Image (cartoon, rainbow, N blue to C red):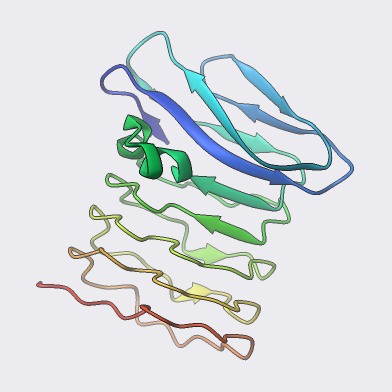
Length: 178
């Protein structure tokens, strides 16, 4: 769920290594097509009215990064992402919401095909209590700075993760003042 309170454009980066086209439905009737075999590319949509939108991505993309360019350039879309409702059925292998300052909800499951949680929630200061208990971590190879800068995070649901593939945990620790 994306809120464009202010004159925000919303950006995300998708990686589509499949032989099929992906579709981004921006929630206001606009649709954008991501060509097959398209490496990471920034997609931006500008909304004409202030509201809350549900952005849906359909197709076999394998990587999604919210706010990559926003964080690097100071783009205001880093304030817009509020919730991730579902991972869907796409073969996602990597994702990051780094810098999504207003993200406050993520799904309580994680697809087993995800291998990277590199800076997944870095800087997500609006995450307080999330339930990651049911996240399937068996394929994860990196949790590099996964929760860096999440100073308000109080609980992650007491997970008992099985992490046989994990090799990089640098900066994984959750340090809060709460």
